[in-house]
Length: 369
Ligand SMILES: *Cc1c(COP(=O)(O)O)cnc(C)c1O
Image 1 (cartoon, helix red, strand yellow):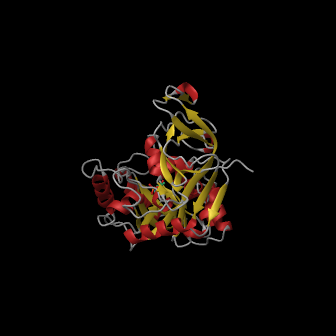
Image 2: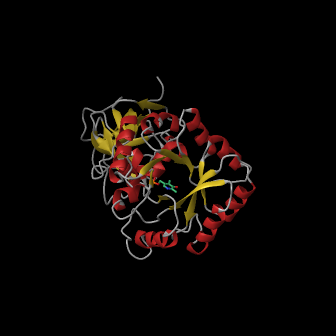
Image 3: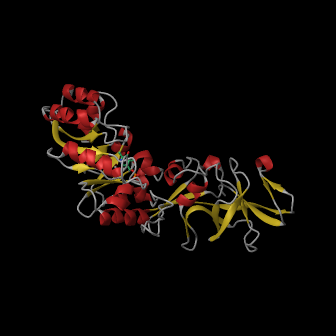
């Protein structure tokens, strides 16, 4: 028998979550954001479930090529645009739309030989200070692009730093939105503003012709713990599960795991699960991190090691060798352990856990669940 750990990808959950994005932004076209191999879920695994999207947004040419090979003929957007001049040849060949966020990218376009002009998304740095033209330089960039025969339609794009937070006032989404509206007011073209947090929280307040549904597509909650997946009606698209391969009976004073960081203060029974940080389970999860044992909530005990972690079975007398343990996602009887809860325990976000699922974990795609 192989090591009992596996990841399940729930395609119906993905289709459901994308439909939630559409419900929040009914007048917008929806990009399914599939960068980082669909946030760790696998582009090939999830493609069928995402066919209702209007387009796919990503960063890597290999992922764009894979989508074309899977038969996708619709829009594909490169969120960071090109990284060198000859990338534009791939854009022409694969018919990719691409973000333009720097003068250098415009220089490359001006030198590019193509029969078909490209659709580009001109990016404004509205305050996040990651990619994009400043409000001062944006219009000059637009004018330059607009004069190029290599360029077809110019769309307008920005990314919010605080769509998930409560900073609605100065420095928050309101100021960034105001910057965007001021700079683009009389420019033609479609706009793309919203990530998942903005789709869920701010769809009434802003117009985004193309919304970019990332984490919510996979059932992750961008504003956890303020809201949870039940509040937003999102379903987990990934389950990480394994089994108990060892059981230990502890007396008061016994310790568990590396560094003996946990000491039992009473007799306890613990199960040792075939899952560790080399599978993508965060080592930073402290004692007390939630898990499901045969669908019942329990907690981790002691430090997570490379290949194993321990869980408390004291109140679960029927659990033992071979019991199924859900590390995150959907339990055996439909219970849910949100990835956001586990991420929170590790002081990170669900995004990081999904993306860090290790290659050694076998993945099964569940086409009906
Ligand atoms: C990753 C990304 C998104 C998606 O963000 P989520 O928070 O996962 O919805 C949207 N826009 C850009 C530019 C991104 O890089």
